[in-house]
Length: 253
Image 1 (cartoon, rainbow, N blue to C red):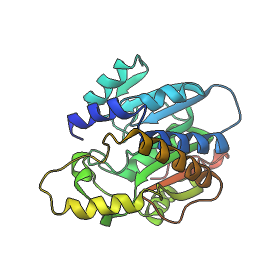
Image 2 (cartoon, one colour):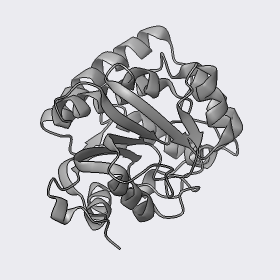
Image 3 (cartoon, rainbow, N blue to C red):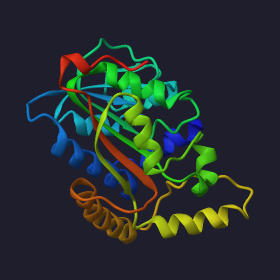
């Protein structure tokens, strides 16, 4: 990811409808599926600039990793210390350590050499019965200039993501598309991108009334993702669980 995009995320993450909607959707899924106990041990695997870690700290003790020094710099700028420079393909934690692992817009990235290897690492560090929540961008045919800026390796269908999660040993609890409402807008932007030589991020400042409108709309979508699901969208959400049985928790090879 370009260094300028980390600054862009850092400046917009607390107010932009996309991040607010994404974080609320993931928190809703975590609340529905996670073990009902206080102070969960949570890993934000690919923590970016750390704003989501601040939200997760209200639920439990949070650790963060990211492969990019620029991300670590911005995360520490938020006052977060429990973060380390590491690849999601080789996590610096013991087996069976976390109650929950979050991986939000990470597996798709060019710096992740193998999404399967990363998923197996998530499986390894989760406790038996622990939950994984993943979000990735949807549909390779939706590639645009934003994917160049953020260094996209792959966009996924719901089926593709589900199969890879199953191959990594998990039991899938939820698969849904997300960001359905803004899908037509993004599709139009992808089409116009093809006539432009300038590569730009999708995360741009929008007028306040539009931002607030999209926050409300995405709030409805967040509830649908948690309890039913969406048939299409810009993203794919998945919730998966590591086996509760000690006899079935060996990491697949």
